[in-house]
Image 1 (cartoon, rainbow, N blue to C red):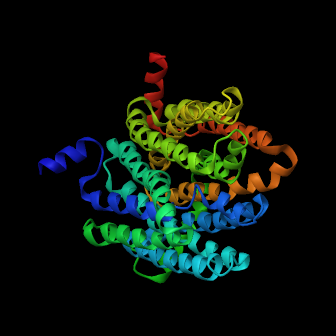
Image 2 (image 1 turned 60 degrees about the horizontal axis):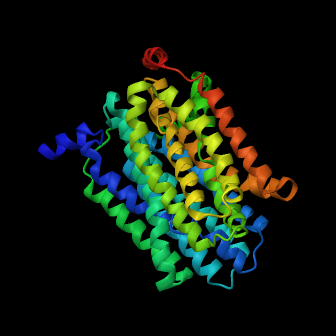
Length: 419
């Protein structure tokens, strides 16, 4: 009981601890190639445009799966939806490696199975996020979702990157990709077998009611337009995160920063990010979710996105200076964490449908980020792409101003008195 009290006091729902651990390990397996696959494929003869297309089509299926994760939890329950995600991930990964990468880099097979693979992790991870939205106490919801993004990002961008640094050296690139399945299965065991918490759903027994739940993923934005704004802001949140790996390693190499060093910088950026995921979850509960998103997330990320591009020029490729700017960007990226508390709080019922829109916003950047690079880098260059990403962050600040709930309005008034 003592342990439970400690976990609950720090905003980590004690009844879902095994699920959090499972998401951490699952996302480590899923994200182990994110920071190095693009430059490695370029070394194998692929162009940046081909890489952009590969990651863009991958992002399309991630976006679709992210939306379905919310409404499928309402129709099927979280554990069944998460299990489906594990199965699809393994099928897609096996085909991507076995029939694509290992088969003389068959680009057609790589495109096909990377798409299938993209269906996997949103069904697993974002379904668990819906679970949290239902089961965490309202006054600790910001902290609970902060812990979710801590384990999600910690696995995807930190443990995955650092594990790859070791695995590529000792296993090689292809075997490193194969090892992802082991980590995904281990994470699934913790989240689905060791996790005993139950999310009881009522009135979902027949096919007709399940169909209605799926439709709510569309109709919720008409019923509550602020949910749509939340989805747009969530999309902007990580668009740069998925755009940077496509072109930034090549750009940094021009200033004497090799891909291996970039992997270390990328991992360090997201160490800061996962720590600040927790901090901004708490800050959001104290000073208001909207204020945190606007000023730390939107304005902060807009400025540091530009700084991350110009810092190699300002500091002549000094890795410590570039890394420091990157760490600041990664920390402020966590300023958007309270969105996962703000959006489901806009509705009293159908939180799964509201989370479906938010999850769609979380999935779309995997497509939009690489797509922006592929479409624009040939005409406006890396500098132009970075400015586009920064402007999007500033736009998100304006949009967030219109996303309010009564409890937030009180906190905003209190925050205004302080500043």
